[in-house]
Image 1 (cartoon, rainbow, N blue to C red):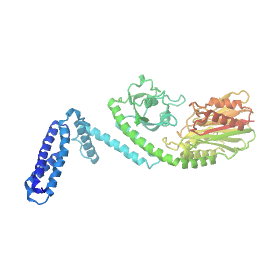
Image 2 (image 1 turned 45 degrees about the horizontal axis):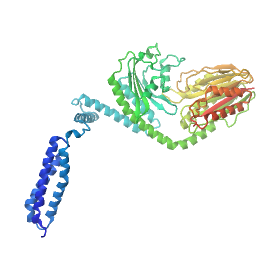
Image 3 (image 1 turned 180 degrees about the vertical axis):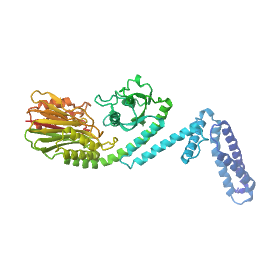
Image 4 (image 1 turned 60 degrees about the vertical axis):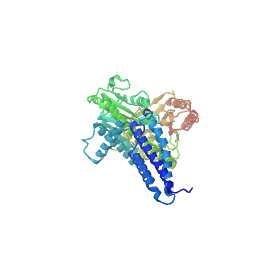
Length: 568
């Protein structure tokens, strides 16, 4: 028997029956809420029913088998869909997990509408308080991301982003002062990178620091903290945000008083966390006479901190990638310039023996020394460690070197010269990040007298050639370049034949061995004492060899420099 359209009504009627079954199953699924059923599915099933019935009643009037084939395809389509719908219609509703609740969806929709209205300047009166709050948070998150995107092409982009985040957190939480700190994995500290407002310091100030607001603010702006024995480090280590409303009862908060601007009020500390790692911290403060922070403000700061952490991490990652690709080329250039800045050979100076070494770490290039024979009654020695690395530190190094060489020939003391250099580097802005450590020694061969001054952590030591006793001639002082108002003390000391003057950079005494122990100033002095009868050159060589032996196979992370002056 030949297949013709006369048989097409059979599969058409079968397809129509399937369409009816599909509609029934869709109604069951919709009623029992075992799955989502859209209007489109009902429409498709209805169309299947109509087409099948039309084909069944009109198909026999045409020639050929085309309608029969179409009818068979419709039937097979229904045959595939029906088992799936039967499974859905027989599911228990409790087995279907609601990923986002209806109320949450409504909340998100409300926030989106409020955000769109805010962006277009529309009236938000019809929006709920929750929608407005969410819209505001979304706008802040977007602003962080936009600021991060703009920072990629700017050398100071990260600083600009941190300042923006800091200002935003201060404004949104109503804080009197705010700071953003970042973790420095290299130094194993957390350092202040952005600062604004009045922030009573919750850490112990240096004993010799005058309680003047400008000085203390400057100290805070450039402060670094270990991960223990201070509130910044301990909260960063815990990775948990904290609200402190009774600082007098918290052992981590140090009360510096009695000045009013030093009295502690309330604090919020929010670690900046991404991918399970803490990259920094947001610190917010209110003065003692201001209202206390609340739990709501802690929640707000924590939420904004999450937004900020993602933006900051993105910028840091991009910068690290760029720096990694450029490091080799920049490191070669910086190392070449650094070599040109130090004396090609040591000058021969009557009455003294010199020993020196500078062992640069790869891509750091922060240390330099200089020996300047300016007059018959003055030979000047400089040892400096500039913050940063690569070409950035070299620019400041060149400035320091040029200024010292310019004024060292004057009749001014070492302390005055260093104060002038500091003002030249610090400029007019306390936010300038050009700073470093520097020691200046002026020696008068005619009177056998030295005068010296130091800023930062580059000291000047005197080892008595006869007794072996040593004296630290300089005291700790602010780094140069941080505060233009700092005046550096001038220290004067008579010396005699056999005495040894030593100055060094912190990379030498802080060099680590495989066990993580530092070389230390004490070990340096021991080596110098053991070689007290040797020449200045031999003393420096002995120290260099001892440091290398101590370090062993451990990596060198900082420049190591030493200058030895032995009086004959």
